[in-house]
Length: 247
Length: 288
Image (cartoon, rainbow over all chains, first blue to last red; front, side):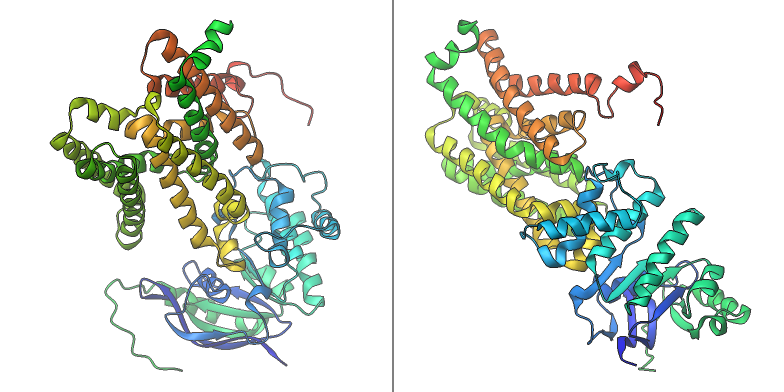
């Protein structure tokens, strides 16, 4: 199967401290991969590296099959300024960026697409509301509508279900499975182990280094989870320069 | 009525010039002010206004009250401090607000010191509070040019600028326009402050940027409406402020800013969006 993403001895981090350390592996095209790990394990960092917001300290990420513009990224909701006076419609419309760019107009057909995306996430009637008036779940639905419009081959979701109710989670899961059915590649950062076991076939357990990567039921064992917790607690402010070579 | 509102402008050329200058400052500055406010950079604007002073003062030292020298000096100093404060915040543990406070105190002291080396107290007053009633042709052209550049640039940058405010990570994931947009926006801020410096002086230059923006926040939920209202508030402040100063014989710059301040206070109390009104007159709750 073709690879959508390849990590080659990848190290990502901040201020020379690695947050993702010597990660090697392949994400197959069309994969539906849960990324799980304790706080500070480097999950969000990994997604930022893939999008290109963060540059690798070492190693490389290859996505030969997928162009940079073909990656859709859903940041954690806390990173969005929700007090900014922008309407739901405009927020969703930004999903057209790849097609409209800096100056391009939005055609009538694209307006239809925007409306369809908004109704696909169940937000009809909210188009003119500013995002500051939305609840957490409604905001996440709006961001999913934006993802729908991006129409990307590789979709990266950073904790999309945090503090959402069951109905919203199940609606958004339906969308994710629809994308999976369309052979898109999806990486999703999660904290809910039961959800991962029930919904996602493949899991990467990350604790700065990859603890395990494979079929979800093989990865999420008690032994692996304990190992992940222990690996993450060892942060050293006076760490030596890492001499590990390519694994 | 005519005597009160119109004839000061008909009779005196300096009043007409001041009016044109105030309009141009309002058109360019108020939209920039709205974005500064929404990006939580209101105090950045204030600090930057002070940062311009030493540059303008060096210009003054070299060639007296010369428009070109003071403008170039101000722009250079403004950019230096904007980039310097940004770099200090990025490279050290000091947060951006603290490093700006440091920069602006140093700049203000340095600027006043330099002006006092050569100039009189009148020159100092001119630098600190501007001279909106003494705008010559060249200054008017400069201010008008800055307003034009501001509006055109904002029109071009609108989409990435809005997106950079709401969701910078998303912008970075779809396009490399984020950093250039931020820099262009900082440049606009510096240009407008330099323009306002000539009319209103260092200490009040941000007045026509921030007060109308803050007032507009209480009237509109939508960004476009907010900007239109901010410009309107700034224009009204200019007209009314000049009239007040004419009839009372008071200083024009402070009068303009005070009128903007009054409009801000009125908006604060009466504005329908998130103002004090909902506390004063709570009203009964709605059905849905």
